[in-house]
Length: 282
Ligand code: C2E
Ligand code: MG
Ligand code: MG
Ligand code: MG
Image (cartoon, rainbow, N blue to C red; front, side, top):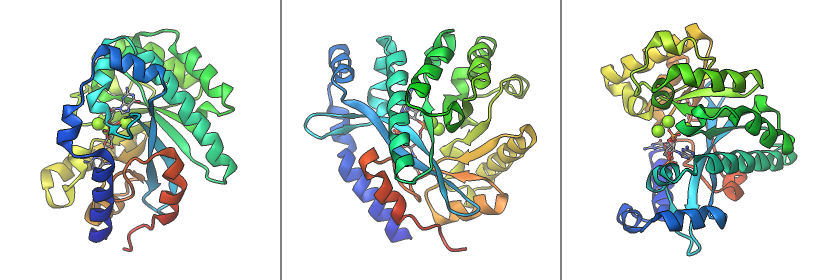
């Protein structure tokens, strides 16, 4: 499995090019508008697996800028600029629409997968977002109950009262709501408990290596406990080794996502990647 992980990481690095390459990309407001308009920004997908039985039950859509020369650019290099250019809404709409299109296609192949989509903080200030997302999903014949919207803990807590309006509306329409990067946002637990989340994602910074670091493990255990008491699904992010997997299974965590299972992959490649996945033996 160590070999398998090394191989997965090597192929992932090869796809992305090395970091230096990534850094050298010049991205201006003009190029990012053009990239969006030309369909060069699209979702890749990373599996989410049930720890109990190893079954892949969902995928998270992660934005990639796939340039005409084949170079794949990660979101850290362009999401901030897109948001500053006022393009957060078009990005969310296209990610949601394409994630639903791919979901329908996988349904037809007998792969039943829920989809998660990351949503920018700007959406939380937009009272029309809930109706729009409902229309987008329904146009693709997908039930909102099969879609999870991920919001980072810090984006929600920046103005929890305002966020509550949009989030409650989305929840009423049946969307799942996930707190992303949990543990990094200094939330007030009192505020958090008033927002109708359905899922909590433990940030990868606490997950990777927690099996040998008691302080990280304490955060993981406290998060699992909170999720259980609030009735939330839990996804551990950044599960990268068999030891991480085993610890989470022992602690009763329900779902795992990370390089141990698979990195984010192009949608065309997902069925083959899922067919190769075997859960670690315990
Ligand atoms: P996130 O939503 O927390 O997504 C998880 C990130 O962790 C992804 O990075 C994923 O590739 C990476 N990851 C997954 N497993 C592992 C692992 O085992 N080890 C390590 N080291 N990393 C792992 P990515 O795709 O570069 O995305 C970074 C962030 O960009 C996302 O964090 C999310 O906040 C944001 N993002 C991505 N796509 C979108 C989008 O369509 N809209 C918005 N608003 N934000 C997005
Ligand atoms: Mg996410
Ligand atoms: Mg996260
Ligand atoms: Mg993150």
